[in-house]
Image (cartoon, rainbow, N blue to C red):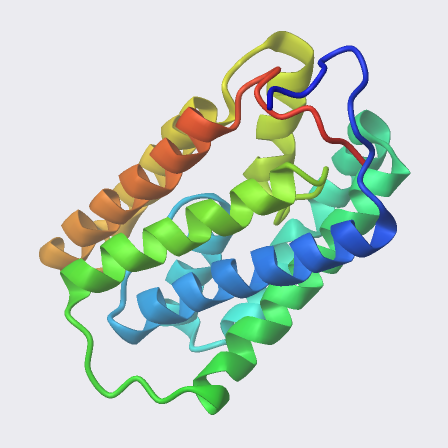
Length: 205
């Protein structure tokens, strides 16, 4: 049944909590797969992964710190509910990405499969967060703001920014790992671009 666009359904608090938990777990698992085979992605997560490979500082600490400046934009442009849910999402990704390796032992995974599966998991996780007015911070916040205020597709904007970050990866990672990372970024952003469109999903928080 097609929902009535004139009467959008409001998400309940328990629905938001469930979506944020599942979404951040999916994103975190994708990040763990990438870290296992030394891949990267775009946005603040990709930057945090690159810095982790260079500095050996845990991803979670870097990811949370990189997102700190974007919380101001989240509050000023998207409102307190969005900002608070985004802070919670970033904190959960930071936590889950550091603990998933303790919960599951990945002894071997092909980098191509890791790129495809990891990119897909992160795309689905971010999509879940977007639909409940949350994000994993960084460029996601700016992408959502541009889409909701100027009609610029969040996925396409992120793809452009991700391209810049992936170019930087050429100076850090082997060529084959960069190519796998680019493939994973395409999967991630196409999931968002084809599924997160104005008017397609009318639930809100």
